[in-house]
Length: 147
Image 1 (cartoon, one colour):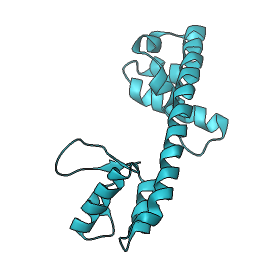
Image 2 (cartoon, rainbow, N blue to C red; image 1 turned 90 degrees about the horizontal axis):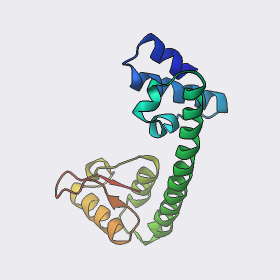
Image 3 (cartoon, one colour; image 1 turned 90 degrees about the vertical axis):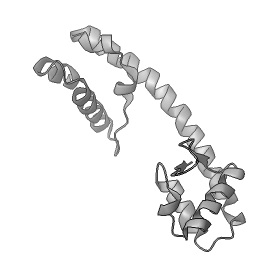
Image 4 (cartoon, helix red, strand yellow; image 1 turned 180 degrees about the horizontal axis):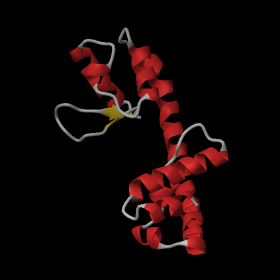
């Protein structure tokens, strides 16, 4: 209903409408965090639908997105467990704080770690070698790493 209401008021406001619809869904389900289930699952053509057709498209989007979210969550949990398992192998002084940063942030730049620059880059390279984190940018400089 939120999605339809926003789109009826402002037909070109698809992004705010999807964010508000996902927020309403999270609120209705009692979640603490918003997940972009409708935004990820609805197609542009679905946003032109109204009434029961839009409601059915939202149901389909929710189900298909939920399946993908569960798969991604399982993968993320497995990767986080692996990072925790290799943490004792790290010898850097602030390795525990660095591991905590990787577990609590989407992406981490070596410069943000509580280590000198060279030590931070070496720690990130070591974690990549151990398969605990991934380099996310594909660049040689100004890299970001994440679980």
